[in-house]
Length: 348
Image (cartoon, rainbow, N blue to C red; front, side, top):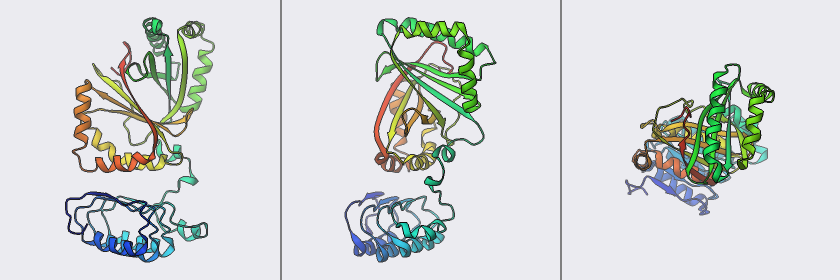
């Protein structure tokens, strides 16, 4: 590790190295000038080993990500890390989950000045935009194959009517039909300017709108099933805005491990810059009601070949591979939909 100056990412997790190996690794960290991410989770590295790694960090100006989670570092190890971070100005991501016992909470809470304790605030408050109160709804409609054309035409007409009436505090951001993924499915993304009160007002007005009630009754004859989710947008994504086409859209959906939403947001807040050069990033959202711990990333591409080239280009950017490496363990399930905009979708 000391002599290899090409290796940039190393995963040594779950090896139960204990303190002696921690001392050796600490010396290696101090000398290495190429390593950018190092995973030492679940290795029983405690007092002496943790102190040695902290000493190594003091002299390292290259490491960006270090995972020391679930090592039982204890108070001495954590204090050594605190001192090391005063000298190290390059480490961007330090994971020390599970390093203390219940009795350590008193001194732990005051150790890191900028530490955010996810248990003391909802992730909706920590990750969503503070300057807006937008609420989003995503709808998934499974349509009878023989009804898809009529469904699209009727949905377009109703959406146009709603947009003409400024008294409705809602707008359609985009409407699509799936091209690849689940077939005969329509996806709609709505925005409610004003949050939950706007949603409530909109539903109240729609329930008194005879034309809309007639549409809903007719639509029910065309559907096999439907479901929806209420979403908030990540603070580090741009707000979705209308765009001209033609484009295809990819909706990538991630079911996260419960309790990892903050960690996901922290990684993507740094990584989103690698995916904006071709204006492909449309919006990023996480669920509030419906299936929980679900994330949706919406991307736009000229065509499938452009998608392939854009995604491949991200791997050439320093830092993107580390984001993938550290977010993959947070995912329980993932799904990709390639979608074609409906005729009057603001996102074309």
